[in-house]
Image 1 (cartoon, rainbow over the protein chains, first blue to last red):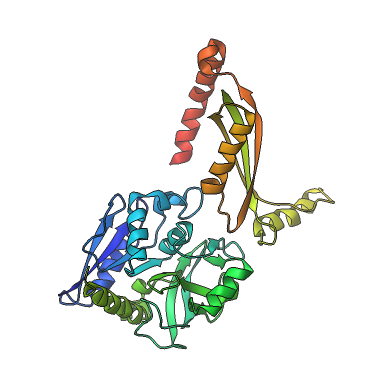
Image 2: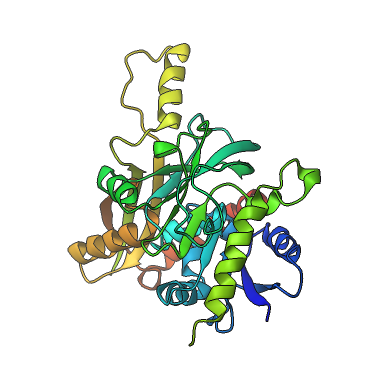
Length: 231
Length: 113
């Protein structure tokens, strides 16, 4: 049976269709992806959840600050606590940090520039739902598209992230001032991942890189595995 | 009782503030010499219902910690500016408020576009 992956839509999300389309490349026998409105209070029946990029609630106050109060976020927290795979891309990463599901915060880029470019990132761990099928040290080219992607946290948190193998991706040439070149992190269990680059926009040769497919393949595998977990 | 409160949010010491640094570098160009420690943050003005001034301070502090500031990168300061007369007890105050909001609203709508 195909893994069912839900892509959450907040008012102001704008990458949800990119994610659904990219997941569609795996074919209907493996993946069934659909949109979940932010007002949903249950995520029952889903095998993985993606929080896509965009400007949820207009990014008013701070990116993710208001989205974390959307009804769906309580369901996301429960879903994550039960071991369900959750991936936040760009604005979705910002929402996960504001919601306290991932550590740290994303502040304005060093140099105060909005960045829209391809960057090199390296896979740092394969213990997560987004990198399980990848290899440590793999170099990927992925697009970034953000103003607030400069990851930061206090020294004790950084020490924990390193010790617990929770830094998922690092930039090979730091574009935004992120602490320790961090482009993505995960929770303790590795089932919640947030990253600033957009894997869903690197799935077609026409967009110059197909390196995003490897990450989404890992998510599909994790979702398929989660589907077999007895409820 | 209603209290007018000012909540100021700024970046934690040690967190880079490129906006503040840029403004600090720009000021001497306009002849404002000898200015340092420029920080850019946010200010929220609000009025809230509370039994007394310490209670107003406590409510605003909780708001600041739970929503207005992100404690990972920001700190906040709460100042209770004073008690405000309730609109019900002062007709002139409410009339003044109504005219102020009437003049402010077209600009606010334009800003929202």
